[in-house]
Every structure is written in structure tokens, then in C-alpha cells.
Picture (cartoon, rainbow, N blue to C red):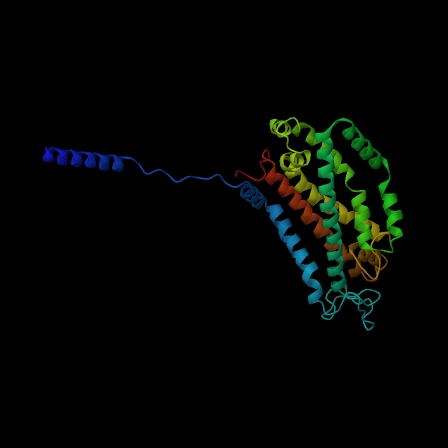
Length: 315
């Protein structure tokens, strides 16, 4: 009997070893690619978007570090070099007042970027909350918000902007506040129309039946589903704000001396376009590079985020 038991154990262990050897090793768990990684891959396949991003990074670096590289401060005049062309002393030349154009272009680009990014980010957040909130709440709240939006869209906002900013003495902080106050309506109208279909989805209804607050429903369920639109809206809003600030400053209604922006530099350069063309072409080239680079980035983001777009290639 002991021999039979030992033989049985040997047979069972041999069978287990055979089965273990016959069974293939279980493959490792393959995780899905992160959504941000997919967006990054599709964005990097767009050569125009990559070029735009590279140009934008160079412009930001120029705005941040250009003041440290310049030999003169942007407010310090060189009375021995009034309206002189580019040289080793003044790389981009000087203005009629003897200010170093390299330092002023760096500071002006930084000022325009601060205004553009601040206004674009704030208007995107405000329009997202108001547009999605109006769609979710519905009823008289939705009608009131839409009536207010349509009324503000009909008002000539540029004239109001000009009147309010002209009394601020060229304070760029006041310019940001005024541009935010009159810059969210159109985006909110677009976000509201997109949110109408999202509020009918099952996950929004489930959140409502489970007692989730409307604020959490907007932030956690509705806005993430239009995040692609919000990202593109932010980039395009930055372009629109920079162009708007440049127009106001060009007309003398925005940033004023001794502070400078791209608009003030263009305004001063138009008077000397023939005698000192560098005063106009330097800020004009910087503004062109900024708007073109942001437009290329927005186009790349649209192709990367839109699943129906084939411009970014396959993930």
C-alpha cells in the first residue's frame, strides 16, 4: 500500500508538471494608450503645428529673457543714438526717443502675451460655465441668460471698450478687466448650443437622478465632453485678444507710454515708416509670427483632438 501511494503521488506530480509546461504563460496586461498621449502623437505628426509651437516657444523665450539680454532698459533713452538703424549697440535699432527697440520689443511682446493669455483664459472659463449652466438649468434661467447674451452681442462693444479704456490712462490691468467683461458672450452662445445635446445624455440624467449637484454635473460631466472646443477656443481667443489689444493701442486707446506693447510700437513705427522702417517692421514681424504660430497650433490641436480628422494620421 505505501508503494502504491508513492507511485500515485509521482504520477500526479508528473501530470501537473506536464500541464504547467503545456499551458502558455499568460500574457501581460496591455493597457490602453492614454488619451493625452494620443493627442500628443497626432499633434506631433502635424508639421505645421510643430513649427508653430517651435516659433511660439522662441517668442515666449524672447519675451521672458530678452530684457536680460538687452544692453539697455526699455525705459532708458540713449540720446546719442536717436532713430539709428540696427547696430552692435542696439540690435534692433532705436526709436525717435532713443529707446532700444530690442528691449522695447521684448517688453511689448510680453505685455501683449500677458493681456492675451489672461483675457482668453478668463473668457473661456466664464463662457464655459455660463453656457453649460444655461443649457443644464433650462427654463426661465436659460431664457434670461440667452436674452442677456443676445443683448450684449448687439451692443457695439468696441465703442464701449474705447470709452472705458480711454479714461484709465493706459492701465493694462484695466484693459484686461474691460476686455474680459465684453469678450465672453459669443463663446458662451456657442458652448450653450453644444451643451444642449450633452444634457440629454444618459450620464447627465443619471447624475441628476442620483442627486449630484448641478455645479458638479457641469464641472465633472458636461465640460469634459467639450474640452476640445475649450482648448481651441482658448488658443483662438488669445489671437483675437492680442489683435484687439494691438488695435486699441495702435489707436492710442490701449497701453500707453511709458509702458509699451506691440500696438504702441506699431503706432509709433507708422510715423517713420519711410525714414526709419525698422521701427515698424520689427514689431510687425513679431506680431505676424505670434498670430501665425498660434493659428498653426490651433489647427494642430483641432486635428489632434477631433477623432474624425485624418490630418493627424492614425494613433
